[in-house]
Length: 352
Image 1 (cartoon, helix red, strand yellow):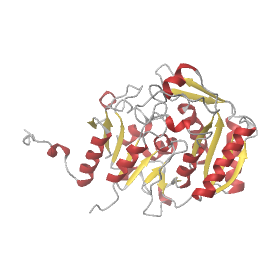
Image 2 (image 1 turned 90 degrees about the vertical axis):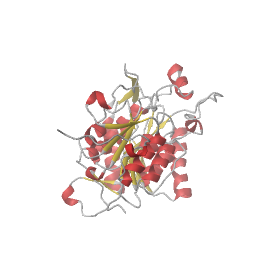
Image 3 (image 1 turned 30 degrees about the horizontal axis):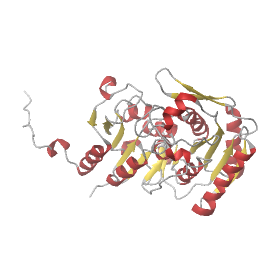
Image 4 (image 1 turned 180 degrees about the horizontal axis):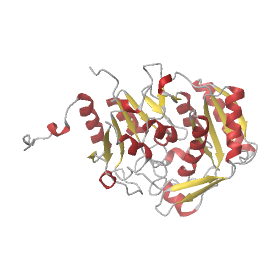
């Protein structure tokens, strides 16, 4: 039996057109499988958010991307919780009827799932989200009134004792070829990069869990929507999965000297990290590659990025699929060299 929990990190970066994890919760099956071959799986909202669909497991930890970067760098720890009190921020730019839909979704999670929300708050100015696409094909975005978002978050934290923040911002309604490609399963999520900017801002400022759900007008039906994008076609809101994720998102421990419980998780307790093979240039993987963590890259999860491990000096085990990655995790957890599972095993080399 292992002396400590076997811990893995699953990363599929946001807004880079990942073949798996670039759509609406389509990496959830991957997370569910990998969670069965480790004691703790740490991942982020892009993997677990599926609009009105979600899957909560006690050993899967929902950690916002900026917080995950700080964790991987050894600056913050993660403290598991039984429940978070959540505050809800609604963008003043959301139309009254659409705002009412989101408030009803929040109330529905309270009534049917028993989640604890403290209060909701409308920002004192529209957040004015703008979305962009880089020359490399990745999506990103800007926020016209970030101070309004921070004022709302601070009030929920100080006056409503919120321990996690859910944000709903009004996004521009997308049209045209980029949206059609995404809905048909062959494009980059046009809003994912801007979503990351919003949650990063709150986590960086207040150092508590946060995640974002976009407010958009419902799209007309399309008979050719890809199954990978179909979760976003189900209704008026993407909020339920965010609230479920934040309800048990671990709190951040900012000083290891104050890490007084054995349940706290630090980066030196991470055994393995799984990432698309062309997307190894992110902060978390670069940090974890400098530790004892085994990096596992997945070839068939193609992205718009061009950062394979060998190009940036990262030592990694390359596998074709997430099914193969699960096997490597199982072997690693058992202390077995994966090479010994092949029919041909070379003899030991003798050093001169």
